[in-house]
Image (cartoon, rainbow, N blue to C red; front, side, top):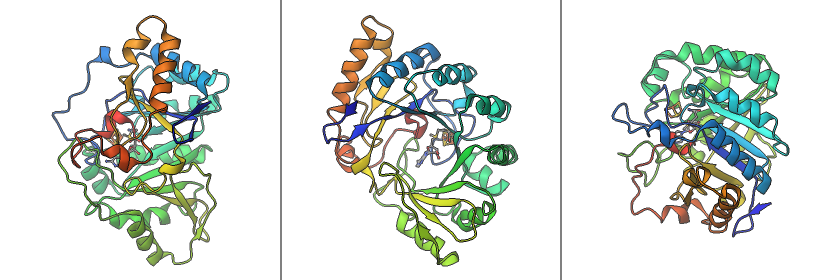
Length: 328
Ligand code: SAM
Ligand code: SF4
């Protein structure tokens, strides 16, 4: 079992399989001039599998596949098929923008990979295009409805962006009223490739909740697992639930059970901190298992207590990182 230096059990790996994406969400990356890493710097499917296997032996039992956009990687299903066979890996999930998932929905269902997070920050074509800089709303909407009706456990991630989509907060709840989905509203984080000062944000979790309570004064708070990053609620008459993720306010660090590996093999123990090791050379060298395990133990044994403490590793509040390299 992996336990960090603050006695938090680490059993959840977020594995980024690429830094590339077919959208250009303005809160995640710039419109152009992005320095995607060279292909040979990205972990191969075999390397991703080997790392997963080693980490599962160390106590990881849940892996979320993320990116960039996981489905831009043509060999993604090869990875998922093999992960599915991995002993002691109890939960495989995917975070996606749902533009390219369509052709893979049947196989995902067959494989039993049912937990899909769909990022969707708008309920109409225009707002969607303004935020993502691509005209893909219809495809995303169709795939989303298909995933829901085919019985996947779908969670929608909606980043609340001042001046861009706050008018869609209540309508998306209304739109999803008849579906068994969880709509999670996220605070924006300072990882958009740089350029914006993030000393405070307007749409913090309190603002979001207050905004929702004006339309639905009687929602009820739900019990959530202790490691959940979202605070969850139920509106009477709605089939699904909604949640708020205080990703910028960082109220959930005390129970954080996550470890991140980027598509280039960086080990990240907190979104707000710096990478603590790189596994790419190790996984391409000798004594792989031993060295990976030791790098992971060292990173996990040296974790910041909170995101605020981790942030002190940076000299400023404008981060140069984009979420597309960290994986969210
Ligand atoms: N491309 C996939 C997607 O969008 O779902 C997976 C990768 S994306 C980087 C993972 C998650 O990070 C998404 O839910 C996205 O909304 C979120 N994200 C990206 N940039 C963010 C930011 N600046 N603040 C908060 N969340 C962000
Ligand atoms: Fe791509 Fe996801 Fe970032 Fe949007 S949030 S640009 S879909 S990686």
